[in-house]
Length: 273
Length: 296
Image 1 (cartoon, rainbow over the protein chains, first blue to last red):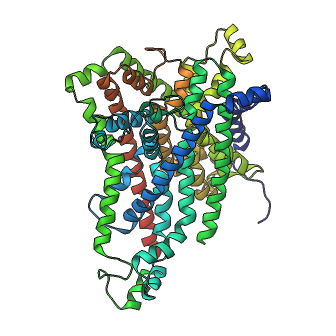
Image 2 (cartoon, rainbow over the protein chains, first blue to last red):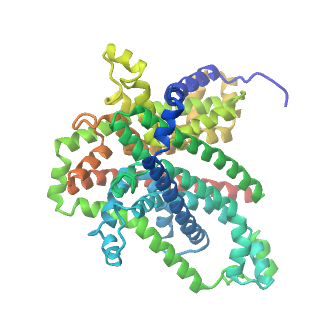
Image 3 (cartoon, each protein chain N blue to C red):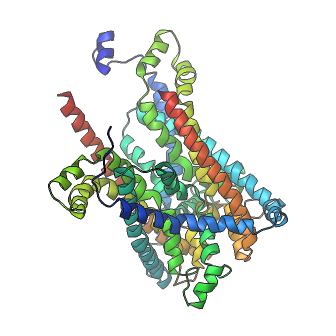
């Protein structure tokens, strides 16, 4: 291709506006948070990031996010498979409904899940005789995070399952493999990079979640308090240093996950080719 | 490809294939999937409306007519009415620059545009409190000039813009890229001005993608909780949006109040989902048609 001047107008205007808007809305607030952390002494930073209450909050945030992402992966594989490969009445409705957790405000999700799983809710009523307490407990956090992260694995897997080459499965069948064996030793390995990508997306989403958790977890310090809730608690004490320190920890984790996800996506694309 | 498989096996379509598996397994999988989805999707949705109407339709409307509810609805509409158009403007500008021109640093710019999606809403709110709050230098200066951003409408609008930042741009960039620049070049050659080209050539070519981005952006803007909660200050009747009022009602054990407002938000989610599905279905049909034309 030879070099020539792009005749379209508006490059300066559109890029200038984009950069200005990006700076004011995203970069400036981000920089303030980072600078604020640099103002702290190390001792101060460690005091607010490494203490018993904060560690309990990280453990719950990461642990529950992991469990929810795992749950979503297992049921996500199943759901994506069913939605792509099988036909049954109501399939299109279900397929559309999968995006519901993306569209529903998290506060509403938290409210209705808290009601549903409480002792006199429709599902909680069945769990209570079994001695399972689903609200105001760590289980509640996992339930809420499973809800908000549900679409990720399903939506990343669907197009990949749809594009799988049926001939490979037929070859496995002709060679005498059972359907179960074909699935676990032929199909699943092919889907693995995509599943991991979906898992990471659901996990990353769960780490930052706040709205739905507030309603269902009860926010009990050391027990059901997640890291974002702890940030809000510190803010309510006007402890800006404490809030900023924990926020920086979350930010570093989120950005590392973002980098990991970008790498995973390019890996799974290369893998499929 | 399907064609070759059929002739290879010498069987007409409709008969069982090697990859079909057992129908028993199929139905077991479908049932497990349906149980999971009804527990986590359908029941929570039905529950919103069941709880909202649990004490009768009269109390439902009475709760919605409470002054707190009305002002929360107003607040939500105002915030979205400012935040969404600004992000649309940004989305169009960003897509125009990124899709139609070549410049260094494009990949980094794209990463920055996606950034707000990976930041926790609470952290986003905190950033704005640190920047504009009274404990910071800028906040002090603003206070001396009687400008209040945090615990006020401007702050709520700003964080809403932040959390919904990528929606429109993300939707438009790939579409504008795939449309290319030939049509714009033709329009300019034929003597149209830059703005005319934009209004009559570029915008119509991306209008459905734009609509898609707007409804997603709007749904998130109206439903945002964490970030707005941090900067709003929770002043009842003044800085409470619908999701924030839901929390307040819930903490006051006003179940019908919380669920009646929630039912409006759930309705919004359903409408969003409906338009989204319709747009996707439309796109799918266009692609099918195009494929048919190519096949002929």
